[in-house]
Image (tube, rainbow, N blue to C red; front, side):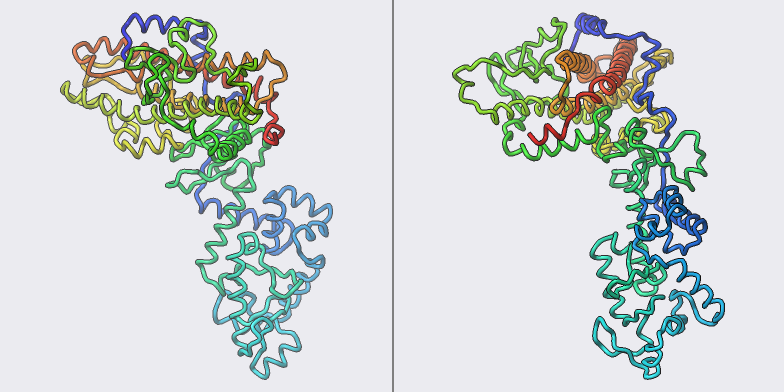
Length: 613
């Protein structure tokens, strides 16, 4: 659908009622003011292993314990070394009980150290094959020494007689055959990561730890590497401010740390942030470009909480079979009743009969342009028992209410996906038009996003999580927009030299806004507003967001580069208008996002109670 200049002016005027001061617009950003002071740091698997090892060594030295014991206690305290140290000096016996360790562990360790000092000839770890026999001999009890003289040992697990050279015992002196040890350790790995990391002597009731040296001796480096992976997963899972990047091609972890913390401090120490601090800036960007919520791993959904997103997804799964009719991709034209398929992202539809209507409410589109209150986002229960409605049960009405919110959620999700696809296809058309004009586009390979040349791959990444053209260190740029100071940069005359970056900024803004709007319907479904006026105000802001975003997306979808080949000056004018419109939408969404978070979300949510019903 093409808009002429008069229509464009009319649409610009429609935005006047919610345009903000230009300085405020240019200073707004996608990141909440509450989030200032926190930045993202990135960690490879190796750096996480180093942090775990360093934390274990420091804790062991501070408490005067073996590293294996310190690691067990750290896992029992969810890797919070500060809490562990404080509790240890208050009540070490309680700490040992929490870690399922013997209460006389310290005395036993001192006794073993004394014995090791007196008889220094024996090996202390089974890491070297040559030390195997001496280590076994060191751990023998008096009874075992008699059996060693005979050269054979009856394993209590396998009930087989084996040579003493094929047996092993921990410091507790409980001896088993090597075959029994291998089977036992393999069973622990297969059972669960926690059991393998917290492996104990197989003798019933014995709490002696199986150290990493024993694992390496019996199962080799491959299994040890797997245990290291288990430890990394547990380490990341126990910290709210650390999460794995969800991109399938990325193996990094992202951590939120105070901006004042140096890189060396972030590498070697842990910063335990509260849930409120993390939630204020939960939407993060990995160095690979993937954007996600650090708390739940889903795509960004600020200001809606993770529990609302999870509840909405569960609701969709439960109701999927009951509302399959919602998933159809067509709507009947209100005038001629022909089925129409939605192939674009905005809600402005035009039938073959030239009737224009809203995809969401099927109302006349002209009323959306003239009414001051956009109402197709509002759910209204129709009172009065008509003949058709009289037989409906509460379950049916509940289903209708859910269908209302789900349809709008699905429509914005579809609009988000369309924006991702059209972004690539439109920029490709711009390249072709510029090539036909004689030269290449203003988007050089160094400046262009990787999505420009990777079509389908780029679309998939952006739709899932990725926004590589946004700099992780500049939250304002993550919206896909930048201040309209770009208008001051003069481009050489000629379509081939024109900078198409303004189109990408507009499309990225649409993607961000559609994402936020679709989650706003998930919130609205569960929300219980204390007062009716709050509900009406929320719906008013939501409707204004939809109307302004439809203006931007429709302007982008109707753009054709070929139409400006003869007069590039018109393209410059269009660019300025689009940059202004993008900035207005960006500022509006940033401010309303803060309003939603501060005035609605915190007060209106009672998700668990609503889910029970």
